Each structure stands twice: as C-alpha cells, then as structure tokens.
Amino acid sequence: MNWDAIGAVGEIFGAFAVVATVLYLARETRKNAQAIDATASRDAAQQISEWHREAARDPEIRRIVMKSFSTDGVEYSSEEWWEFRALAISLFFLYQSQFFHSTLNVGSDEESEMYIRYAKDIINSFPIWRRFWEQGIASGLFIQGYVDAVQASRGEDLTELFSSHQFESEYDT
Image 1: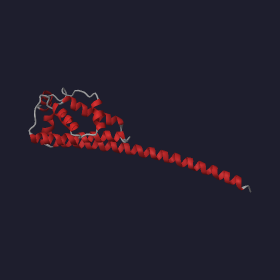
Image 2: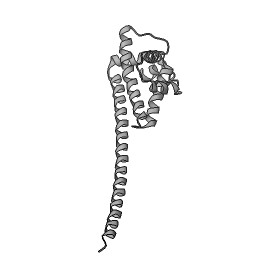
Image 3: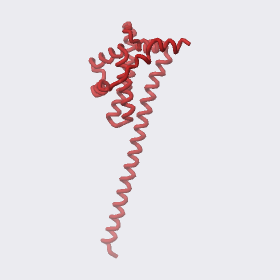
Image 4: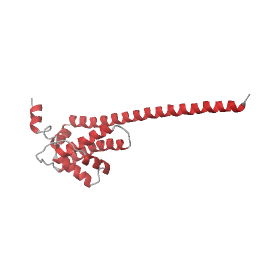
C-alpha cells in the first residue's frame, strides 16, 4: 500500500470539501444579506407608514401637517412651530436613517433615493418645510452626507398636488 498516494487522495478530497464549504457559506451569506435588506426595507416602510397613519388619525397632528402644506406663507404660533418641528424631525430622521442604511449597503438604494426625493419635493414645494430644513442644516441636525444627497436631488414641485382648492373639492363632497 502506497501511503503517499493515499495521502494525496485525502488531500484532494479535503480540497473539494473546503471548496464546497466555501461555496455553501458564500451562498448562505448572500441569502442572509438579502434577508437583512428586505428587513431594513420593510422596517423603514413600516415606520414611515406609522408616521403617516398617526398624522391621519390625530386631528391636531393632521391640522399641523396640513397647515405646513400651505404655500401662502402662513406662519405658525410658537407652540405650533414646536409641534411641526417635532413632526418634521421625526419624518426626516426616518428618511435620513434609510439613507444611512443605503450607505452601509443595507436596504435598497432605490428606496433610499425615493426618500431623498420625497424630502427634496417637500422642501422645494412648501416654505415652512424649507425653513425647517434650513434651520436643521444650520443647527447640525442632519448628517452631512444626507444633506448633500438631498441638496443634489432634483425633486418636484408638489404645490399643485397640495393646493387648497384640491383639498376643498376632494374633501368637502
């Protein structure tokens, strides 16, 4: 019996086992990364959905948010500004969190871009939101990478969508 030949055959089988193990671990790692991405996307959507659900349910929150969509320069009282700012911070922190996850390659880049675009749309369209954004930047409220991403986004003008006559005709019937 040639022990050198048996050792060589054993090394070949060992090499195949190592390759098979590495391939299996790579596949499982990829599946785990996909599961983490799906969970991150689901969690972000759930949190943002909850923010909107709460705004729709609570009459005072709804009033503050609806007032923020005014384009005619309506001002808030000190108390209303504080309420609005707290609501805006919570929403923009959700958006910023999604952006931060995407920089870590967690979650969907497409979703992150969508939330950046939403933020830019609101900032472009409504003076109160623009004021909030500018004050937030000045006070260091947002991480710089997020600020840069929002500033670089084109965004759309939502004023027509949120015009008061559309709300009146839609909700007064």
